[in-house]
Length: 452
Image 1 (tube, rainbow, N blue to C red):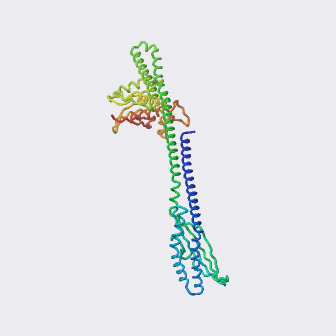
Image 2 (cartoon, rainbow, N blue to C red):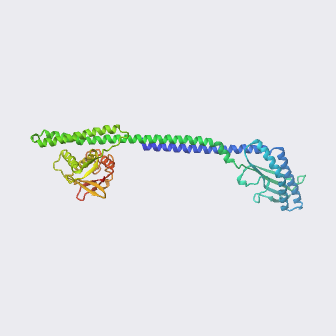
């Protein structure tokens, strides 16, 4: 399984855990709230059913009954009936509230308010004609208790009281519907106080999981990076061993040539090449050891001042020995430039040799090496007249393992590492490398280095 897929699955599992914790906390909150309500309602009913509470209820009922008798006898109007009913309840209310507060405090610590209100009061006569004195569509009349909006409370009971106004059970009769509503001002705060510890523990566990997830992913990515660096290094260094080994092999064959054996200058020149390539191999081995012992395995440059002309002369001379096709011409326009560059000679030579190898590989028989200065940068340009590179692939050729193809086929040998490795080295020199097509065919690679 790829690392990205593993990270995605882990992230989704973490998100699922968070949603699950949220769902469980929400359910716990709902259950606690419902249990809190039930216990409170149970306590209210215990007080509601006490004899003293019942006596107060009967007092306001009897008072209402007497006023109703006056109303049907036309002694008082409907408005007077409502007024007298309300005045009487106001007299009873302080006693009721004091009683309720004292008794409910014995059963629960919850602060709550209670209200007994008229839902509907209807008179019916012998002809089944109805006279509505109170209704829920009119103003709500509080009989006993506190004053608050019904929407802010919890309806715990609805009762009907039906009675005849005459003892012989003849009409008229009345029907009184009442609601008992309670309000718990601190309901949600009290419930939250009870479950806050659960929330804190869940949060701590979740944070621990997040930290472990982050630590695991960081380690995974770090290990992946280290593995990639080591793999890249092995691939690149293997790629780089080919040049000095090929040069030494060719130089050795040259020393066996009769014409070279009788020419001291040729022998000296060839031995110098072998010596330089031997040193190059030794440096390659040193860099292998150096990077294997380094903490992160990255390239460490050893910057030196080098004379541009001498440096390129040696690099090009050694490269020319590896060319089998003697028809290839290298025009070195840098050979007489008295200019100092601050580079790592070893690694920078890898870049130059890679570009020269590519020019030859892609059928270039004329290679031009030039030096320019522009916008405060030193520019080294290597051009060829080979088959060129399609413009659409210019941004791809510096990617690792990417190889230019013809009609979907890779017709040229290589691992697709040379240009990738070259770009990494140039970037370490704080520079950049680019490619452009030539008008007459072939390509030009330009290395831009900041002046130092």
